[in-house]
Length: 271
Length: 285
Image 1 (cartoon, rainbow over the protein chains, first blue to last red):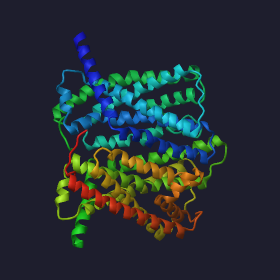
Image 2: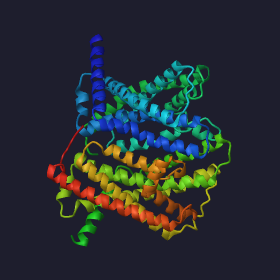
Image 3: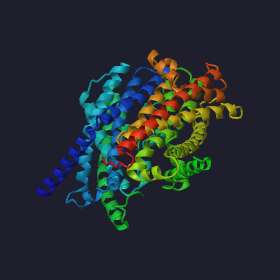
Image 4: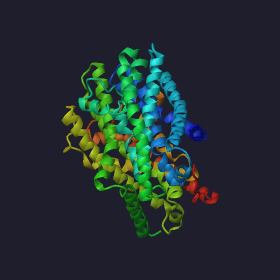
């Protein structure tokens, strides 16, 4: 039991190391991942300025853009990762290794969190400095709690998707693309989803995405100066997501691996 | 090279691009795919507009909304063409490993790239029509936002001329990106985002460029997309701050400048790629 745990932890560390090393070895990638989100965020902030929206809306956009960096990382470097591995012929190495697939995915997730946090902080700082958005943080621990719960829920969702993407060919690429703007819209990444201007059906669909609760909670604590008394429901919702998604991800991974073996699709390239 | 050879190469490239883009799914899934992303993009900016206007306490400005609606919808051409042309070299060289065969074939690689770009234009047109239809249905039909467009009064010749000039210009930009991609192997994913992001921010797509700082307005005035969207808006709404003839003239000038730069960049890149053995360079990372 202890040996197995140590082996899995070593696999997690190894995958984490590769992810951090690989993610930061190309300076042009690093710079692009910091600059490109600022371009879109700026366009949305100027749009709010055009309609004379209150200044806190610029803060909503910046927080949304910061968290979207994590969603993009979940999609492309977590969910689609097994698809990339299959295309480059390294997926089978994972499957013959005497470690849990979840340990490998955990390493990817932790490495992704470290890399994306670096980028997210720069997006946040540049956004706040350029657009002079005031923050009102009275309970930083609440903000951190919601932030980390959101990350765990998102990466658990990424692990679940990874099992599905493992079976895909080109669909993986298209599906990851497909999950960008729709999730950004439904999670209210650039506008508060709970307002009266947003139809009930959109709010209902939004509640199926953990990012919605995380974003709403972080914005309330960081921009509007609220505390745990107003955001405890967000915390509960995120914990429920985590409790559901993590076991589901493990079950889906096992199921898809078996299905892949039966159908001979784990080593199939150029589908 | 004979015209028939060129036309055949372009036609085959369009057909190949269509197959690559579509044969992973049945037609319904494909149509949904080409609708969902741009529509979700439109919904994001539409709701930013609605929520922002509501919070500002003022009435919804339907003129601004329509400005944003048209700009964001026609921006699909930029995104689709850039995405098609930036990924093309990477996919054909490193993923499918066919670029060297295409390069060796009697017809030119340039015409092949043009054909693939035209396939991107076709896909963008499908997305545009679906997005316009569903966008009007959702915002005007379901949410009651007035979109003052008389679809029967559109100046079709002007719209067609604007589209031809704009699309030609975007394809020329795509050739610059192809040139960069053939010289490099790790920037294809970010190039689309860079170009699209800059054009989206400075091109007057979802907000009027006059609210940008002076240096931002200078950039905006140098970009062909600014004039492309102005003339498209004029052809649909028959209103513009500028005379449409002036916008068309600037569009032509910026298009010619982009074409000249793209020809130079692509030619130099192909020369260096051949010299340095980059045409069949396969790199995993």
